[in-house]
Length: 164
Image (cartoon, helix red, strand yellow):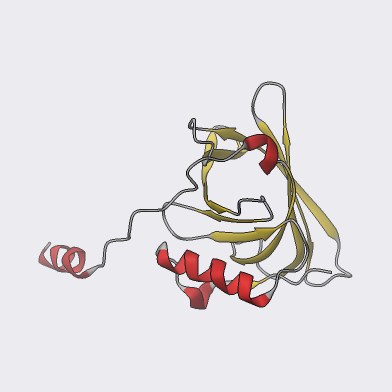
């Protein structure tokens, strides 16, 4: 019991997760190319990752994640899920791959012109830096990585996703 108490007093608390103040859901829809991330188990050793969002009449969001495993010559794979906006600001979603479980999805940053975004999770276990384009200038990518680090992410765990 003392060991648990000692461990909890030495761990550094995470800073509050910053969220985009207001997300225009209609503008957020469309294709987003994953430029860098801390991958989930499904995203390891993948290339050409793209998230596509479509707003349905009921207010839910049809999401399609496409990628290739191993290389650009690898089989193209696709995962479908449904997202549900969970607040009026539009920055917190629940993404459902399997009912009834909803994964945490938080839009922490979106550029004013909706050209780049940073999607985070409260646990700080995964992060996605995405762009409307398949490439991003190095300075822009570094700015968004620095933003993620300020949110409590480890820059050493963030990897780039090859696109073409």
